[in-house]
Image (cartoon, rainbow, N blue to C red; front, side):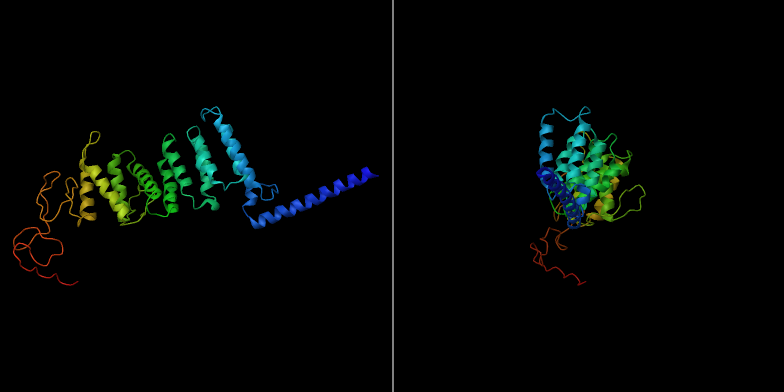
Length: 318
């Protein structure tokens, strides 16, 4: 009799557990819509703990390998997929785990990182889209510059502007666009200057210009990038000789963007008021900031000439 009672209790307990488990699973999905994508099991909120345990096992497994290569990359990928099945919102799966297979299997890496980019719970993470673009241009053969551009742009947008990572992401963004625009027809310095200038103008008329639009327009950061690009195009180095087309483009940018900056058009060295010849290359300059009476340099904003004492006429009000 006692055995029958025990069996009945076990059966009833299993039925009750099944009913409670189903209700728990439904409640979890209502409270956390992402639960359905994590697991079909009623884990009772323990998926975070399970994913952390799985991560520790994954790290230990990687520690047993000399390197991730063709002989083990499928197993590493399988373990990553298992981690994502428990918790697709765990950022370190993508920021650290996926990069482990980026050399051995860049296609799979980008596939995993793309899923993470589309995950709304990771929408503030700027490193994940950057890594996707980075793998495309650094590890894929041939590099997929065009496909990488949206990922670099996403990284810039998610970083929120400013210093730090934003500048790093933006550098890759502009260089990828330069590679696409150039298509091997121009050297990298010329192409980068073209893309930066086009971005400054906000001009997308060129059908070869992929992902048009500006990133900051006439911003200090973009002007700094332009100035650096001009210098790189104009100044000769051991592995670079300026080209006629590159110099023409650089001169156009100087005239349009830096017309009020008083820099030498030949070598981009800055010069001060009253200076007639460039200290960097000896080119004759367009003199500015001199007294109209004695032709000597005057301080910016001065009302009187410090040599003759004469008063400068006031500029008409606009």
